[in-house]
Length: 418
Ligand SMILES: Cc1cc2nc3c(=O)[nH]c(=O)nc-3n(C[C@H](O)[C@H](O)[C@H](O)COP(=O)(O)O)c2cc1C
Image: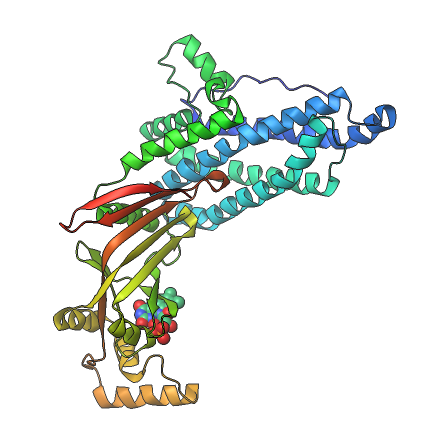
């Protein structure tokens, strides 16, 4: 078994090369892990436990996957993929759309497999255990290898083709910041420091585990100041990012209402407009939600953009949009949707699908090409009083910033614990 030494890495001026270099480091750690698997029974036969070599190997693998692998995943999730999404067009965009969810899922699955290995490796490293699951090691290793191959054959060449020198510099800078590495400024000492730790956090940030957590808190409080003072503008920013990231149904949101008996109910609707006045969706006023809102005009909206690991919770009072607004939106809908809205007594029971179709045919016959908006169909606008932005973070140490509207219409904001 060999002890691994950091090998020379490219500078962050070539971020794609750095990413590939990290793959090299990961491959070496996987190979150490596989060698450890064959070494452990031999060591056990001779010494009755994990020998010094096995301990050192376990420590090296632990150190890499605990401290460095997630930085590499973050490089891809937070910078490389969003930046590629912003510039990819046509076939590249289609490739990316198909590939990105797989890459993100791989990261999650590999993280989960790592949790299983982590415990066993910790025991080997501190001499208290000798168990290492061969099947988990093999699954972990195979998943990583095919994952890296996939990235090297698609995303890396795409980035090389599509990124301008400025975008390369932006990517390199983000990766540097993630590792707390100062820009080299062309000086050789700085360049060497960056080179030596291209795949790992800077020595300053490695520290003790608890110190790392404190560092995380410190970085998050910077983000807190980075959000917009106006939650609607902050929401607009996130919504645009959701559109750019092509998340599934970005305007789908859950609307929770409360019945006269105090019981909550929720369902998905599509937000059709949002601005300083609030968040608007259209529905049937006699539906369950419509009746519940008539009795208790309060609701909670929830957006979940899983691809970005974000949710937004919005609470407030609900009012009806004006008849003019509802007409305008109704008339902008495709004819069949307008006819459906008239034909369906939303939320009321009906005997069969055939009866529903029959009602639609009758409505179409009656109104032809220009059906009027029925009086029981229109918009609801939630006027927000509380808006919470939630960003998923590693180890469930998520960021939550909540805005609360004051009586004078201004907003205060504060951080909530995850
Ligand atoms: C993605 C999606 C979008 C939807 N959009 C709307 C909508 O904009 N308006 C609406 O009334 N129902 C919409 N629905 C249907 C609602 O979820 C729900 O079934 C319906 O409004 C009746 O709810 P209620 O009985 O609780 O009033 C949507 C459902 C899904 C899954």
